[in-house]
Amino acid sequence: MSRTTTSMGTIVAALLLSACVQGNDYQRPKTEAPGSWSQVAPIPDTVSTTHQPEATWWKTFQNDELSELIERALHDNHDVKRAVARILEGRASVMSATAGLFPQVNLSSSYTNIAVSKNTLAGLGLATGQRPGPSVFATPGTTFDLWNGVMDLRWEIDFWGRIRRGREAAQAETNAIEEDARAVALSLISDVGQSYFRIRELDEQLDIAGRTLAVRQESLEIIQKRAAVGLASELDVKRTEVLVTEAAGLIPDLTRLRTIESHHLEVLAGMVPGSLDFARKPLRAVITQPNIPVGLPSQLLERRPDILQAEATLIASNARIGQARAYFFPTLLITGQGGLQSTDFAKWFTGNSLNYSIGPSVTLPIFQGGTNLARLDQAESQYRQLLESYRQAILQAFREVADLLVSVHARDEQLTHQRAQLTAAQEAVRLAQVRYRNGMVNYLDVLDAQRTVLSAETQLVLTERARLAEMVSLFKALGGGWEPAQSDPPT
Image (cartoon, rainbow, N blue to C red; front, side, top):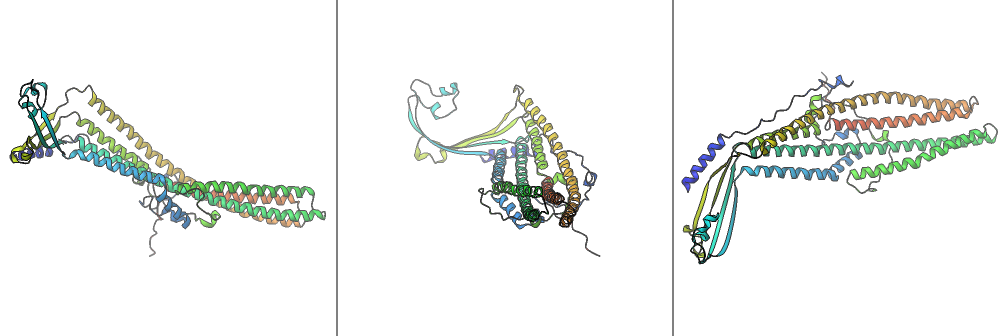
């Protein structure tokens, strides 16, 4: 047996050394990318990090409450937990695909009481296709016990790389699942940030509405006093009352919107709605507007999870082509069986009970009805589809980043003008009130000036929240966090 085993080992080693894996190894397709973002947006390039979503990028907003919410969401959100479970499933599939490279060994044991028909001949079972065994060659009419302990061996020699290509595909598919989990985390961070900014925007609108209501109530009191002594008309009083009720009516609706958005944020963080007790804090009082450091466009190919996921599926598809090609070639198996067999339990574990068989077998596909050709055509067609999806994902990523860079730059200019507008509107209110007290204008001019201030303040906070939202979207579009570029030390 040792001589046979040595010979088989030599044969297997020779086959493995001369093995020819089918299919081409994956190479990243060539893609076109802009040299820098300055070609599509008026933003200078700076150095970007390669941090994953777990990086503390969101701390650039300098808000501990937001940072705690994001960290809690990454830990407790159920979509994230589901994505992690899918990763474990994918890794198990890789292990399953790898198992085919190793010998499959099974051990079994049995006891059988056999009675041979009297109306037959010894060995007649061979003519009916039965495997050789004690019941086939036993004397007709005999009855005996059979104790059997068997170890089965089956080992497919992966000469053409079919199993290895399958393992490569399974690993790439698992990588795609991991990138999908990263995308889930990125989307979660973005959603939490957007929801938090929306809540703080509503807080600021509530603050504006409250201040507006107080100013209008004060104005109403002044108008009523002036009307009592004939210095103002009843029309001025009614106009002011309308504005007071208008400002008061905004507060319940803003409160409703804030409560609904809070429930949304709580669910994102894996909490029951109504769990958080958010104190009201105006947006500008709690959030710092960060700068925009981004890297070169080519870095998206290494950062964006959707691009990496598309490439991973492309790698898997390329491996499936090699796997499909391997089906055209012979399959080489090493099969064996050995164990202890005896009709007497007392002699079962003796050397004379030993039996075995081992040897190679080759299966060559001759006619499969076009199955192998169809399998190969399908694999190649899927690769071409995924290749176009990969290229489209890259173009889409470039467009998203370019659009957001343009939007953020435009928001900066818009904020500058809106702040100047608010300052001018506030000065107009002051002047209108002075002129009204001096009897130079009617109160309608004061009301118009106050409406302008309210509109300017509201538009300013909406734009500030929009810029923050676009910053978070840019974080997502770039495939993760960044850090400001380090300036050169002074000389």
